Image (cartoon, rainbow, N blue to C red; front, side, top):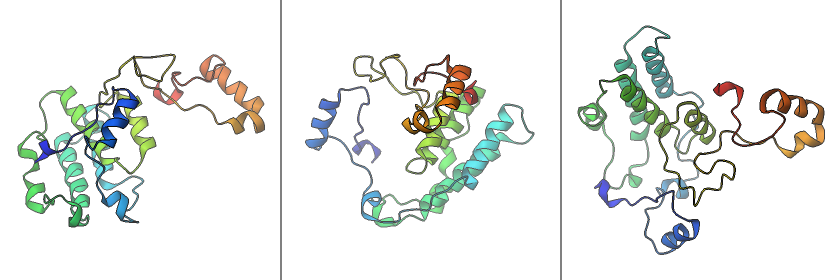
Length: 205
């Protein structure tokens, strides 16, 4: 029963969130991430991700092909990887081949409008990167703005943009120490001389 899982509203104040956690009000991360030393292999570019990339490329007219077929192939590949996970952590809902075969009869069925199809692909890529590659997830969010995260200006720690998430990491302090001349040149060229988390990096323009 998916309704039995209670998530955390990311907009609430940290003290309230921390109190809720202490009082067991929220569902925790699956124990396999805490109890198994090696839960799953790290995938740099998996077959699932490749297929989803191709699905988006078809929709944007970059390549020819069938976006729906690429989308379904990518999701099935991702689910097949999850199926290999230790079933002791499946909360009595293990994924099997029958589940995978019937997955696209419900909400996951490929939508009809371009924007909805893109959002489906982006969401599947976001899910695919969970506990795998946070940097790629962050890049994808900055690239497409999806999933849409609620932002509360009252609790936001982004001082220069209370209604948005940061768009980049700052340069590490070691750059100032060991590469100051090139750092200043890069800041002037890209960010008006200001190393700031809301500046848009070249790859996102």
